[in-house]
Length: 205
Image 1 (cartoon, rainbow, N blue to C red):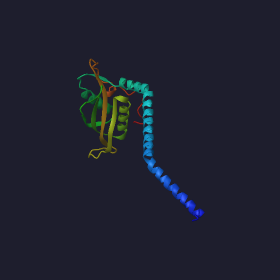
Image 2: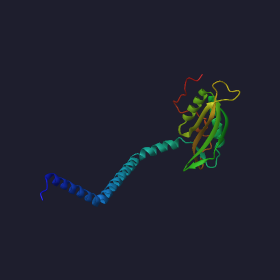
Image 3: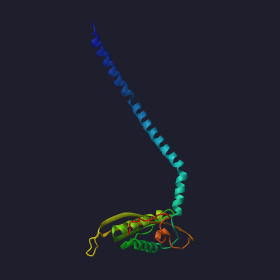
């Protein structure tokens, strides 16, 4: 029986497809294993690069941590700092024209050798006083941090036009050491001016 060239080509093509299919079925487990190995290798290389980056930046991180610790006020063990922080907060708010209608301190939190207290405040003022107060607080750097600020128009019966109200939370950070000086906290209580060279906005009347 004579096979036409076209039929012969079709036969070869069919055999090639079958051979490729059989080869794939035989090698599929090895292919999947190799793909998994490549993924694990890429993941390990990425982790190694991240670890090396952390090692290379260790000195910079340690220097920044030392600067941070140097800027945090220190209190002796067992000393109650809540009242001092509240007095300093009241003083700063009064200087900037912000009225604190209510403030309450949460329990002290410990994180290693650092401590933190959050003070939640309800306030009322105009926008200018609020901006100056926030600027003065944030100028103190690592000592305090304002978060959770809410602002709304003051709808009270005796509220002046443009009067605002709301609430915010200030987190104060400090350290405790045995035998530390009992002097009042510096910037944390608002008893010292803002950092040198920092000037509040000049459009305040």
